[in-house]
Image (cartoon, rainbow, N blue to C red):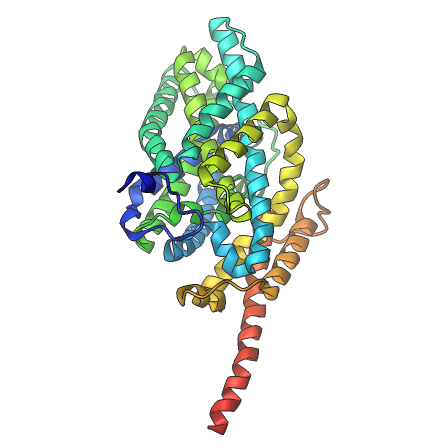
Length: 438
């Protein structure tokens, strides 16, 4: 591998055969994505809102369904070895893909800023309460943003190395935390919960926490040596990564009686390991947000190198966090989820059932300027997702699966399949007539 190849991330082309990887490296990255503080918050909410056994079961069921969806999308990435944005270039056409790339780029850039701010708030709390050290949240946001940006700048291979080293450490610390909790605390005989969640609503929340990640699964699986490697890494990486931290949080919250994870570390005398978990958990997750964001923007700005583009985007997202604007992104990101949800279903349908545009890719033909039926499927998927999403983001007029982004995914799949089959039949009629004349 020459020096120039080391910095390439193949954002606008297929990953070369000799650089494709076995399941373990991608598995580590996907587990690392799941081990974050958003999962901790969800686990604490479930612990306070339903019975322990029901909470854990809902996490397992939700993560299982999520792993299946991600695996279906991951096969598309492993088969083409293209990023999600490049896949949409063929499915939606060159101009249609620009819209997707902008939306996914802005969405993940926003999430980067949100999670940097989240990291800073928690770091401030644990440093102040454990070490009587008060560091301004804005300073911590800047430090966290720059730290999380570094690995994304060097692409997937840097993220892989970070994940391979950090995941065992993270899992080990969390298991030690659980062991100390079970040793020193007993499960309350009468545990108070609000009954806020039904089993179905809890499963929906578990799926919702990563449903947009389903769409961008090819950004990781494109590095797979084979479909088998993609399926193994994605299914088990998502299932274990998404469920591990949530279940640990459910148990810790139930036994210790607080849903503040940083306070739990302090109570157990594990402040320093707590800081390590806080840093690595957000770092490994957030660096992939910026990575996928840069893949999207690289389609929009093809003349800018991905490395420089990632630095620019990272500085913008970090600035948003420092200024506190990240708090305003949450409602905006909910709207973007409405826009993104159908896309995974559309390209999955095109790959598995319609196949027309992927044949164009296989034959090394240029992508069409625009694929009208895919745009129509996208619009219909967005409308349905909007109608099933709770207010104020949506109208909540009806419910299909109780998970609005999943509704969008499925509607996108169905509409794309119907329109694609009709289009294929229409295109085959002239050919049949010609054959009869001959």
